[in-house]
Image (spheres, rainbow over the protein chains, first blue to last red):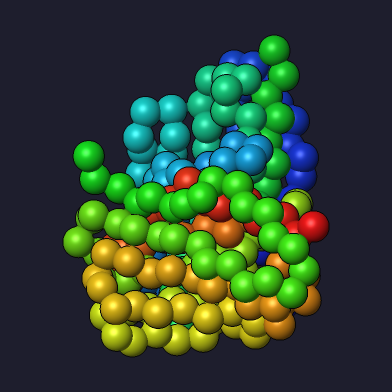
Length: 110
Length: 114
């Protein structure tokens, strides 16, 4: 079992819809969780951080964390073509390092 | 203007040559990291440093070397022992190794072996 798992996609949604990206992790003692957006040929950009159970909203983005289920998700409301990118889930566990998932490719179709 | 800089943006190397990738940050971050990304793949950790004059191997350190003589600098050398070095190399930093600190990436160096 991979430490951080994401569906590679592609996830295709129409413009204006809600995109839901999911991530599961294996280390129960993980304390902090991050979502990065990576455009093709570019470096990852941090878009959300979440540390406690529940929802955290920032503009069109909502991160959701459920530590009991070892599950973290990212919702993107009113999806735009400019949101088309690969989204990386990262988890900080007891190794003292960020562990990254393989990423989910999101395609927003006009 | 604070941030992480990497140079060069593109680098071409002949087989058998060593090359050094530069990473500099002016964020006053203690921890710095090097990752490798292959097309369609996730990030793999090469080396990391949590403090000046100290560094540890990551998951794929063979064929690479690093130094951390200054807080703001963490250069990566890709040696001729690295069998398949063509990849996108990303440097990252965070304030320290505590869990809640955010990690930021530089713009990357794309290395191609000819």
